[in-house]
Length: 292
Image 1: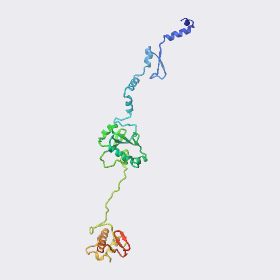
Image 2: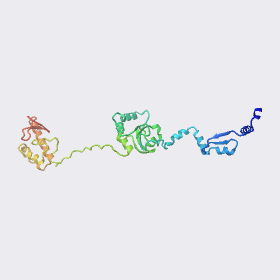
Image 3: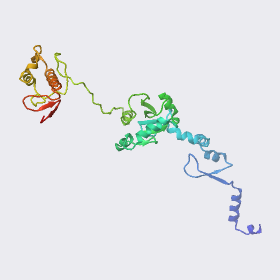
Image 4: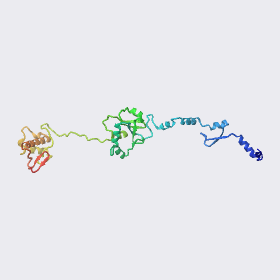
């Protein structure tokens, strides 16, 4: 005490002022940028430093259990499908312990098969939502599965911002391949059209039954009708034509069919050989056998 009394007056005054002042609390005001010194016993400064009610409520909300999971799910639609991924995209929906799912994926993933062809064309395929085709477990998207009303897996659909825009149902005769997946993604059927087979049509008048695999006429495999009629009326077959057979009124195919039958009758009668025209060659069907 005697030491303090020997100090200059201004030092003692400063010590007294410091001892009597309240201890300041330094906070970073929620709505004030600089640091603010507040007096814990002064209601005016204490109220000024209190954060706004909205900020306090947000802080309390963030401290609640599950608040983080709520924030993580903010980018999901009501159907539970993430909106932050690629839109539109195809969902390839599988289920655990599903042999049919494993078989379908194995077929698509086979080297050189559909997935390889699609990847070579720039498609992205995988489990992430940024892929063109997202392979996803049905248990993770129950709302979509319920909307599709499917009971058999795998199943596929196209979504755009959580909404189903196209789907593929089990039992369709269309195969689950790259063309079907492409249609789901783009809405355009790019599957190559198969050739349509049609029955060959030839002219017929009904005078004589038609047949194919014609014999040649004077070594000509594609004679005209006048040439075929002249050959049948010639020395080789003239005697074989019945008076009732007005071959001039027949179609070319009917004339050629008659010529075929005449040769095969000769073939049967002569033990397997028959002359054809004046060439000296023997023919059978469309194969000319020389030297016989």
